[in-house]
Image 1 (cartoon, rainbow, N blue to C red):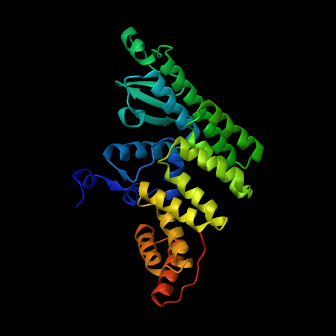
Image 2: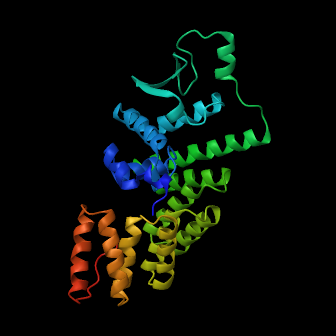
Image 3: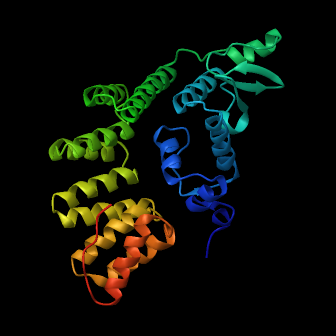
Length: 302
C-alpha cells in the first residue's frame, strides 16, 4: 500500500504531463542544478518547476536563471528556496524578484524601489567569511564552471574547452559528480574506455546514490561486452530510481540476449508502463511480442 506521502505526490511522469515538460527538459533542469532530481514531486516542487518554465518561456537562459538563484541564496540568507519562497519574473532581459512588495534585480541585487535601512540590512547583508561560507562560495564557483561546461557542450565548442571547464569544476569541488559523469561521457563518445570508466567510478565515489552514474557505467560495460557488470550497474540504478525507464529498457535487452526471457519480459513490461508513447516504445513492443512468440531476437540498446 502506498504511503500518505506518496499519495500526495506526483510521479515524474505525472509531473511532466501536468507541466507539459519533456524528459529531456526536466533532466536538463536537474543537470544544471536548478532543481534536485526526484522520482516524486510535491506541491512545492511543482511551484519551483513552474517558475523555471515561466522564465524559460520568457526566453531567459538557464545559465542566467542559475546565476539569479545563486545570487538570491547568497544575499537573502533567510530564504530557503528562492523558487518557491519568492516571486521571480522576467522583465526584458533581466530577472527580477519581489520581496515584501518591492522589486530587486535578482542577479546584481540592485534595488529598483526605495527600501528603508532595516530592509536594506535584511536584504543585502552578505554572510560572514566563515570556513563554511568559504566552502559554499567555492562550490558555487564549481557550479558555475559546471554550467559553463554544459553551455559549451550545447553550443558545440571544442572538446578541449568543455573538458577544461568540467575539470575546473572538479578541482574546486571534489564532489562534483555531475561534472565527472559528463567527462566520462565525453571520453565514452570518443571510445576512450579507460578514461570514461575512471570518471564514472569517481562520480560514484563522490555520490554513491547517483543513478545516472550507474547507468552510464553500465552502458560502458555493456559496450565492452561485460554483461555481468552491466547488469549489476543497471540494477543499482533501478535500486535508487525504480522508474528509470532507460535502465529497464537496456536490462530487458541484456536479459533477452542472455536467454533469460522471463526477466526480459518483466523489464520490457515495466518500460512500456513508464514510456508508452515514444519511438523506443515501439521497439519494446516488438521485442516483447517476439519473446511471447518465443523468438528471442536482440533489439537495439538505447
